[in-house]
Image 1 (tube, rainbow, N blue to C red):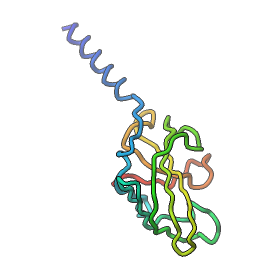
Image 2 (tube, rainbow, N blue to C red):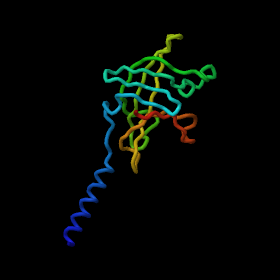
Image 3 (spheres, one colour):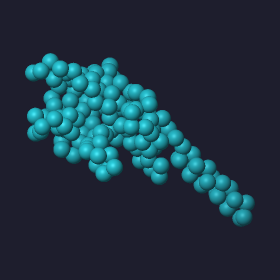
Image 4 (cartoon, helix red, strand yellow):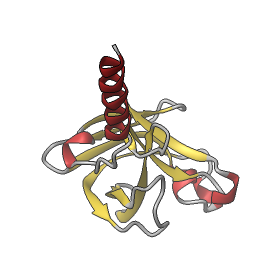
Amino acid sequence: MRTKLNYLFILITFAFLHSCGNPKPQLNDFVGTWKSKDNAHIILNQNGTCILKGVNYFKINTFPKNNNTKLNTEGTWRLVNNVDSGIIDGINNGISIVYTIPKDRLKGEIIFYISGHGLTGNNPPWSLFIWDGDPDDMNRYEFTKE
């Protein structure tokens, strides 16, 4: 009986340590539709193109003229390493979206940080976010995969 308990303890310990690993986000993890609490959508396609629908432009670019403006456009996306904010939840990857504002014919870029779940915050399912204001306040404009 004691031997069975020892094996069970070892099995549980191994399973716990294995689940606390540090999986790296993969490109295919992000293909699909992402939604925010304000019903904005970002569609990331396998071929590197993307569609932004109803994204709060003021949270991306805080110029007063962008207040109450929704970003509805197309662009391209890619997984990037060493995002500027440093490591978030042990993850230093991000998603770069390059988009065009049709009426102004201007290009812009958004770097979304990647956050995960679990004890260390670095396990799937992933979420994409940008800071909403001062990062010290920990407010995020966040998108989760549908």
